[in-house]
Image 1: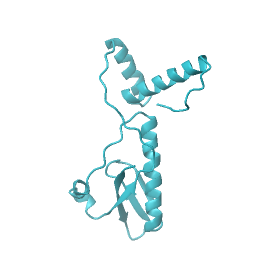
Image 2: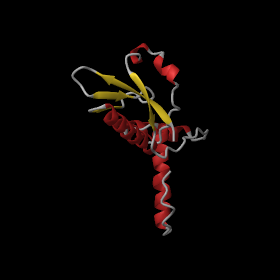
Image 3: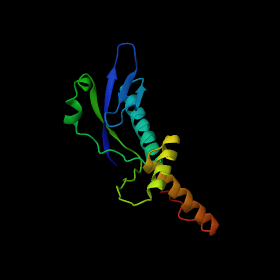
Image 4: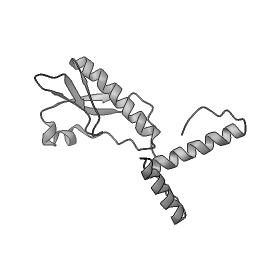
Amino acid sequence: MRNFIGLIHKDADSDYGVSFPDFPGVVTAGIDLDDARRMAEEALAFHVEGMIEDGNAIPEPSSLEAVMTDPDNRDAVAILVLLKTASRKAVRLNITLPEDVLRQIDAFAKASGLSRSAFLARAAQRDIAAAGKASGDKGSGRSI
Protein backbone atom coordinates (compact mmCIF):
# COMPACT_ATOMS: atom_id res chain seq x y z
CA MET A 1 0.00 0.00 0.00
CA ARG A 2 1.18 3.50 -0.82
CA ASN A 3 0.52 6.92 0.64
CA PHE A 4 -0.50 9.84 -1.55
CA ILE A 5 -0.61 13.46 -0.54
CA GLY A 6 -4.05 14.94 0.03
CA LEU A 7 -4.48 18.67 0.41
CA ILE A 8 -7.11 19.89 2.87
CA HIS A 9 -8.75 23.21 2.04
CA LYS A 10 -11.26 25.04 4.23
CA ASP A 11 -13.23 28.13 3.38
CA ALA A 12 -15.20 29.94 6.10
CA ASP A 13 -18.61 28.69 4.98
CA SER A 14 -17.69 25.22 3.72
CA ASP A 15 -16.80 21.71 4.77
CA TYR A 16 -13.20 20.51 4.72
CA GLY A 17 -12.33 19.81 1.08
CA VAL A 18 -9.60 17.38 0.02
CA SER A 19 -7.84 17.29 -3.34
CA PHE A 20 -5.03 15.12 -4.67
CA PRO A 21 -2.16 16.68 -6.65
CA ASP A 22 -1.33 13.28 -8.20
CA PHE A 23 -4.95 12.82 -9.36
CA PRO A 24 -6.24 16.13 -10.78
CA GLY A 25 -10.01 16.39 -10.55
CA VAL A 26 -10.37 13.95 -7.65
CA VAL A 27 -11.93 15.86 -4.77
CA THR A 28 -13.99 15.03 -1.73
CA ALA A 29 -15.11 16.72 1.48
CA GLY A 30 -15.92 16.01 5.09
CA ILE A 31 -17.79 17.84 7.83
CA ASP A 32 -14.74 17.72 10.12
CA LEU A 33 -11.07 16.78 9.73
CA ASP A 34 -11.59 13.11 10.66
CA ASP A 35 -14.48 12.82 8.23
CA ALA A 36 -12.41 14.53 5.51
CA ARG A 37 -9.60 11.98 6.02
CA ARG A 38 -12.05 9.05 5.81
CA MET A 39 -13.67 10.48 2.71
CA ALA A 40 -10.23 11.08 1.17
CA GLU A 41 -9.30 7.40 1.61
CA GLU A 42 -12.59 6.31 0.03
CA ALA A 43 -12.32 8.75 -2.89
CA LEU A 44 -8.73 7.78 -3.61
CA ALA A 45 -9.45 4.04 -3.49
CA PHE A 46 -12.54 4.41 -5.71
CA HIS A 47 -10.68 6.50 -8.28
CA VAL A 48 -7.67 4.18 -8.42
CA GLU A 49 -9.91 1.11 -8.78
CA GLY A 50 -11.51 2.81 -11.79
CA MET A 51 -8.11 3.58 -13.27
CA ILE A 52 -7.10 -0.07 -12.86
CA GLU A 53 -10.31 -1.28 -14.53
CA ASP A 54 -9.63 1.11 -17.41
CA GLY A 55 -6.08 -0.19 -17.78
CA ASN A 56 -4.48 3.12 -16.79
CA ALA A 57 -1.19 3.31 -14.94
CA ILE A 58 -1.22 4.52 -11.34
CA PRO A 59 1.27 7.36 -10.82
CA GLU A 60 4.02 7.17 -8.27
CA PRO A 61 3.27 9.40 -5.28
CA SER A 62 4.74 12.88 -5.49
CA SER A 63 7.06 14.06 -2.78
CA LEU A 64 5.81 16.57 -0.24
CA GLU A 65 8.49 18.98 -1.40
CA ALA A 66 7.34 18.75 -5.01
CA VAL A 67 3.69 19.30 -4.06
CA MET A 68 4.43 22.27 -1.80
CA THR A 69 6.59 24.06 -4.40
CA ASP A 70 3.36 24.79 -6.30
CA PRO A 71 2.15 28.17 -4.99
CA ASP A 72 -1.49 27.07 -5.34
CA ASN A 73 -0.90 24.37 -2.72
CA ARG A 74 0.69 26.53 -0.03
CA ASP A 75 -2.60 27.55 1.60
CA ALA A 76 -3.62 23.91 2.11
CA VAL A 77 -2.69 21.45 4.83
CA ALA A 78 -0.96 18.36 3.44
CA ILE A 79 -1.93 14.93 4.78
CA LEU A 80 -0.86 11.44 3.81
CA VAL A 81 -3.73 9.35 2.47
CA LEU A 82 -3.26 5.59 2.46
CA LEU A 83 -4.26 3.94 -0.78
CA LYS A 84 -6.34 1.00 0.44
CA THR A 85 -6.68 -0.94 -2.77
CA ALA A 86 -4.72 -3.70 -4.37
CA SER A 87 -3.36 -1.59 -7.19
CA ARG A 88 -1.69 -3.67 -9.80
CA LYS A 89 1.37 -2.18 -11.34
CA ALA A 90 1.01 -1.32 -15.00
CA VAL A 91 3.86 -2.63 -17.13
CA ARG A 92 5.02 -0.86 -20.26
CA LEU A 93 5.62 -3.17 -23.20
CA ASN A 94 6.56 -2.97 -26.83
CA ILE A 95 4.34 -4.86 -29.27
CA THR A 96 4.12 -5.04 -33.04
CA LEU A 97 0.79 -4.73 -34.83
CA PRO A 98 -0.17 -4.19 -38.45
CA GLU A 99 -0.61 -0.48 -39.08
CA ASP A 100 -4.23 -0.79 -40.19
CA VAL A 101 -5.12 -2.79 -37.05
CA LEU A 102 -3.49 -0.15 -34.88
CA ARG A 103 -5.54 2.57 -36.61
CA GLN A 104 -8.72 0.57 -35.96
CA ILE A 105 -7.78 0.04 -32.31
CA ASP A 106 -7.06 3.73 -31.81
CA ALA A 107 -10.28 4.83 -33.53
CA PHE A 108 -12.42 2.38 -31.55
CA ALA A 109 -10.70 3.24 -28.26
CA LYS A 110 -11.16 6.98 -28.85
CA ALA A 111 -14.83 6.54 -29.77
CA SER A 112 -15.29 4.51 -26.59
CA GLY A 113 -13.54 7.08 -24.40
CA LEU A 114 -10.66 4.72 -23.65
CA SER A 115 -6.93 4.86 -24.00
CA ARG A 116 -5.23 2.39 -26.33
CA SER A 117 -3.94 0.49 -23.29
CA ALA A 118 -7.34 0.38 -21.62
CA PHE A 119 -8.95 -0.93 -24.81
CA LEU A 120 -6.32 -3.63 -25.30
CA ALA A 121 -6.60 -4.71 -21.64
CA ARG A 122 -10.40 -4.99 -21.89
CA ALA A 123 -10.21 -6.86 -25.19
CA ALA A 124 -7.73 -9.32 -23.69
CA GLN A 125 -9.94 -9.80 -20.62
CA ARG A 126 -13.00 -10.51 -22.81
CA ASP A 127 -11.15 -13.03 -24.98
CA ILE A 128 -9.63 -14.81 -21.99
CA ALA A 129 -13.01 -14.97 -20.22
CA ALA A 130 -14.72 -16.21 -23.40
CA ALA A 131 -12.07 -18.90 -23.91
CA GLY A 132 -12.51 -20.01 -20.29
CA LYS A 133 -16.30 -20.26 -20.71
CA ALA A 134 -15.97 -22.13 -23.99
CA SER A 135 -13.67 -24.72 -22.44
CA GLY A 136 -15.76 -25.00 -19.29
CA ASP A 137 -12.87 -23.66 -17.21
CA LYS A 138 -14.08 -21.54 -14.35
CA GLY A 139 -10.62 -19.95 -14.08
CA SER A 140 -9.05 -18.44 -11.05
CA GLY A 141 -11.56 -15.61 -10.72
CA ARG A 142 -8.78 -13.10 -11.23
CA SER A 143 -9.15 -10.38 -13.75
CA ILE A 144 -6.33 -8.79 -15.65
